[in-house]
Image 1 (cartoon, helix red, strand yellow):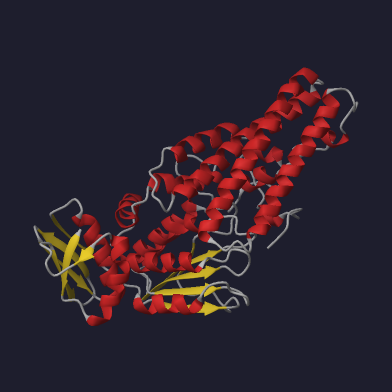
Image 2 (cartoon, rainbow, N blue to C red):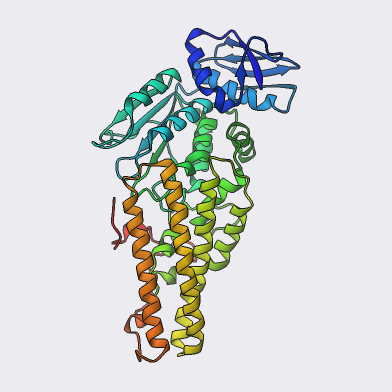
Length: 447
């Protein structure tokens, strides 16, 4: 789209030039379509009437957000008019990547641009003492985009006011339900300071790009007149061209509840299932009240039907494979126990064949996760997750070996198969309880 932008202050020109490729626009005075920027007090106004438009903006961040919205609307609409009421003087992201989840400088630049387009004013990055980010480059981009950037090597003494967790540290996927509920609550109070917080700890197993819906939700809490899920879905598509249904489905990795209930306990059953032992699945009793095989199969189908972009295609590829793997593993955990307890060696032959096929699927899951990691983060740090996948693969091969020895009569019994499968947590008022994985002593390498 060719666009003539008038009323543009000199201080904003570098930001417009930097974001023009992201907006897919060419700024030229010869363009038929014109939008005029005009400072206003308090209200962000976005309008278009045929070939002319206006953006009334109360600040630089609102101007860049308004342009993002205006350009997106103008792709398909010749007439539109609406207002937003930004009340937060600070809309920031506090990003903790101290351990092995170090972003590449390129990904950091892309994140800064995304924040500017959504209307953020600040970014604080906690990197640890040996940061791999090019802080000079990021500071240059932040200044161009009028984002107040701070790079720290230690966690600040206190969490900033108006903090909303994006739940990047819970497990394998973010807790979207709790995050959206917190953003909706913040939208009602209209705070003067609002921060999204994202901590990539415990190995950085949640991908960075999984926080995109969370960034949108916090921005809408700061700007939107009201924050309904329909509004959030529409804005997510408008401003980031991403699919609400696909992203919100990530909540179901750790949420077996129905009728829109949230996972308020912060349980992470997907992580429990992924790392659970094959022969001594001592946490399997936690899943007795749900059909985990069906749950993750349906989730994989839902993720497979999501609308993707170049940015999120590797994210969905990984999560769809993860859901399929968890579904198959849930099936096999039952099948192993059933065949062994029944003394059915013929049945175990088929189970072993499925385990061998699953080992190949685990290799593909590893490759999908590695591909995603390397477009987001430094290869220095991947070794933590690599070690976890390696432990999973070796334990699976050992299980095949042990079960094969029992199946062909070389071992009369498997003592590990008689260990009690005892539930380890109880959810108050519910049938199920899942312990948080990082409350359990882990055999896997920690960051």
